[in-house]
Image (tube, rainbow, N blue to C red):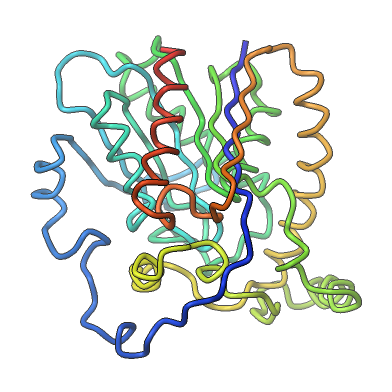
Length: 313
């Protein structure tokens, strides 16, 4: 049976803390942890890591990374990870797979189409069904190249939009993975960031003729998702993050998919044969559970994830 762990935030309204202009204009960071080289940092963390480009089944060039335990013994399990909208796998997202690799799990991830260092117009995702195929193609490639991993427990892990993609992957291949971890999954777009009526209807119409147009009015996602001001600054200095307005075609596709996921997720939870379903709600935390919170809160969420994984490996 398939096991699911869904971690949600229950955000309280807080006063916004503005980022000082001089903070934003500091010399660029090479990495979210500072300017220590990747090779040296991974060595200090006691893990192995690789990065490469992968050509998907539709000939799209996608940037990928792996984070592996250092020991010669087999990992406890394999985790295939999917990032959220506008994000990528090379900045703060790395904090989680680095932590999981230190605890014995082999982690693999790719920058989705139009994100990070992958091919495609920035933040333009006109068809998530094709993105799902990209992910499955990469995951299959990983197992083909690492035959010693094929009999290990395999888990999906998704943050925000990546969580919704994990649900769709499970629906498409229900027997391929042993379970999934959904971090603040985008199963519904909040009314706080969704364009109001009649703007939403107007934008849907315009998207048919100009899908790549980046004009959708939305709130600052970093402000809405990252609690700690210093971490908000670090997130804002990600050179590969998309900071522009959402593109019309992407928004229409996300609205379509989240509407579908919000319906099937409720039914999936009720009707799933697996009795192993865990739902955790973190009162007072914001959307970025695994980076944007205080270090103490991040450790609470990490501890819950590790306990859940260790119980199933």
